[in-house]
Amino acid sequence: MVGAGGIGCELLKTLALSGFEDIHIIDMDTIEVSNLNRQFLFRKSHVGQSKAKVARDAVLKFRPHINITPYHANIKDPEFNVDFFRQFNVVLNGLDNLDARRHVNRLCLAASVPLIESGTTGFLGQVTVHVKGRTECYECQAKPAPKTYPVCTITSTPSKFVHCIVWAKELLFAKLFGDRNRENDLNVRSSDSSISSEQIDDVFERRMDENIEKYARRIYDHVFGYNIEVALSNEDTWKNRNRPRPIYSNDVIPAELIGQNGNLEKNSVLGDASSVSAMASLGLKNTQDIWSLKENSKVFFEAVRLFFAKRGKEVGNMIFDKDDQLAVEFVTAAANIRASSFGIPLHSLFEAKGIAGNIVHAVATTNAIIAGLIVIEAVKVLQNDTKSYRMTYCLQHPSRKMLLMPVEPFEPNKSCYVCSKTPLTLVVNTHRSKLRDVVDKIVKAKLGMNLPLIMHGSLLLYEVLAKLPSPVTGGTMLTVEDLQQELKCSINVEHREEFDEEKEPDGMILSGWSQPPLEENKDKTVVENGASTSAASVATSLGTEDDEIQVIPTQIGNKRKLSDISGSALSDHSSVTSETKFIREVEEIEDTDDLVMLDDGLSDSKKRREQ
Image: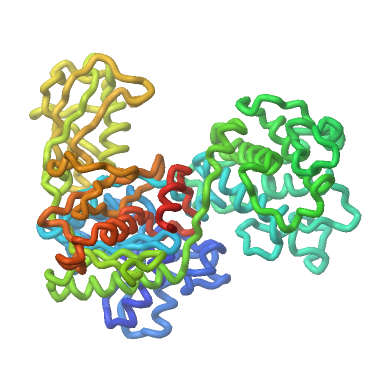
């Protein structure tokens, strides 16, 4: 097992109760408070401990005679090499990111060990079986990247501005202005030693004699100062990360100036609470300006003041609305202050508003269903019952009176560079491009290699070279190899002088690494989401880490068919189209731990699905 999170907890329990007696489980994460609402093997006393080790101990309490070996480690560590994988009969994935999934897929191929992959997002989920030479591998179909953000990243180790946006919107805004009884992952314990635990347990509770300015300042110091210091106390977390810096209000704006922050009279419509704006109070006009730390702090204090002074009746019942100007201002300011603390570039209100999207929470029941399906497929694999293998999709709404949609596994994609060794093509300006850019933007980012070697014939090329060496020109064949993954692929180099900076920002194009275009039925009408209106086409569910969500259709033909649709049913055009839309739109995001950030572009698809 790789992963002991939402799916992993359910999976380990189900494996143990199904008679599996020798289980190895790998997970690098520690338990967070946010895990406790669905990762039932964990308790509050386990927070901060290894997921893999605690999960083992919990299961052994009701199955003491089985053997469970935990590893509190990264699956990409050198010790988990091909020889390590060869000792297992089957590998079960419960991961939350594309990079690790691709890594495990390649090691399973190299070790010839069957892999069962899984994923959930909200009420949607899926289980797929990957057996070398018999079914497609995990990378046979392109995996566009959805925006997924585990809560442990949001609360503890943000590395992108969107992490700060989610934190400010889903945690801080909800805690200050939303339902106070709602479960929240912010540290609420006060750092003020003068207050006993009997007096106040929640630092976000406003004291009886406290004015708005002092309350806002105390919240600021708690979330941007004290909580950061608490996080810094865990030295292991920061061994391979940049350490954040605590920010206190007095260091940014002296206490005596906070009360002089804004001017309520500058707000436009008298008596219209919905029109109040911190930007208007402070004289900030351009939403595309990037505010300084001081300006963000002023907006933070002013927004808090306006919420309590002008919209006090709403406090305690508010839900973030991207059309609520004051809410967007608060979230932008809070996200930028947190970004400043973690060394992340700041963004304008215009950009922040665009980033703030829909949040899909994990559903424990979906995890349990998917875990059960994984075990069913694992039993088939161990019995070598290849004819019964199924990829199963868990749907939110019944389709043909089914919530679980079984599909026969697809055959290997002959164009897959991972399992079929098909050469790729790299279009690049061979005169100006740097080898380091090729390595970073193509070999690592797109091909997912960790420790690549690049060969031109017998010549080893190094990353440190300033430009592509003179032997590399249009028509050159490069060999790229990752010794850790035991993966090797060939890349044909084509020279091109100019690239469109807007459409081709990398200055190079890799082709052949994603699914090739459909060869048949080219004259079919294409519908909005990119799927043929033919009843004989279906798309596998896709998903990865970040960037943007896309929809990639997959042609079935003779080797890609729905297992439970009869010939007569296939003639029911609308039925099959509806059914395959469900499959196409499942996000293979797995156990994203809590939150999935979805592009606005999905809204149309979502509406179609609900209709």
